Amino acid sequence: MELPLFPLGTVLFPGMMLPLHIFEPRYREMINRCVDEKLPFGVVLIQEGKEVGETATPHSIGTAARITRVDRKPDGRMDIVAVGTKRFRINELRHDRSYLTGVVSHYPVLNGDTRLAGEQAQRVRPKIQRYVDLMTEATGVQLQLDQMPDDPTTLAFLTAIALQVNPDEKQRMLNQAGIPEILDLGNYLLGRELQLLQYMVDSQHILPSLTGGPTGYLFAN
Image (cartoon, rainbow, N blue to C red; front, side, top):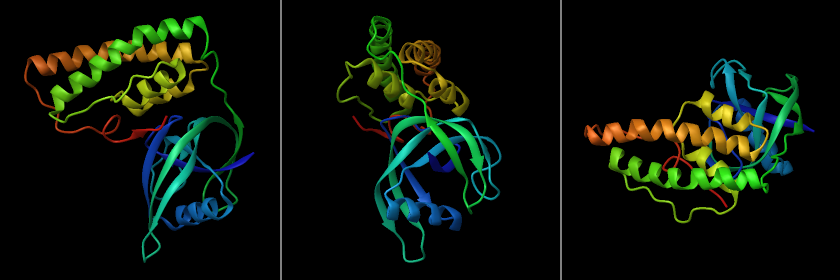
């Protein structure tokens, strides 16, 4: 299928809710089309270029986004909320509209119900809870997980969303073929970040703010 594409400096995961301020004319056109035709659009991390101005070159793996709320401004700008649904792979980029589009194919999530996925989830579950607790101590902002998911697939994407790591590392998680691989990479990144956070807490170094994760984005079960 052909999908409108929105290159961003953010990686979107299935289940992740993403607020966006739409001000460029090309993306106003894109969002209006998506709303009118009830179409999803694809969020892809920028590989080369910038969010504003000329068309950026995106990574080949992204996530389709379904628009759940639109707040239109008198001057044509919009505030929207979208939620990530399914991963896709770009097979061909097209430049015949004011905004970027791509011919994409579904990039399915594999092996979410395997024994290996369950074992990896058992390793990750206590680390993600500890991570949220340490983030609360390090930032001074009260963070909490209402309920730790039992399902390995949900836990894998929750971990990817919550981790405060750079976009390239988040893209690595999105690129992984199956849930065991996502959880394995998440387990490694959590171990590394927990050591850093513990050092910050022990040295009373307070982080000024968060750039995403538990406070920047919501997770939709």
